Amino acid sequence: METVAHGKGVCSDTALLLAGLLAKRDYDVAYIAFPTEKHGVAGIRVKDGQGFRGSDYLTIDTTDKYEIGYCPPSITSL
Picture (tube, rainbow, N blue to C red):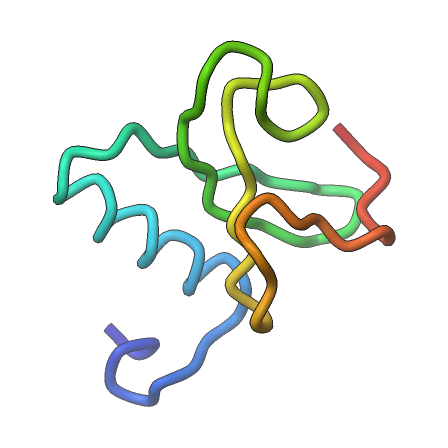
């Protein structure tokens, strides 16, 4: 709720909020955690193997105005 009230939040808060909103609209979503980098993003299901690093999910990084599917080069785990 703080993320909505303040219009900002840490990556995990905004990613989980987006995932929840998309799930409510019947999208197949996931929360993708990168523990080594202490970062988290929302993921949206796509066709087999067309997602992040060959997975079934495209990343949606809510920390900046990134395109869907973009993952910062600093993310090396997973």
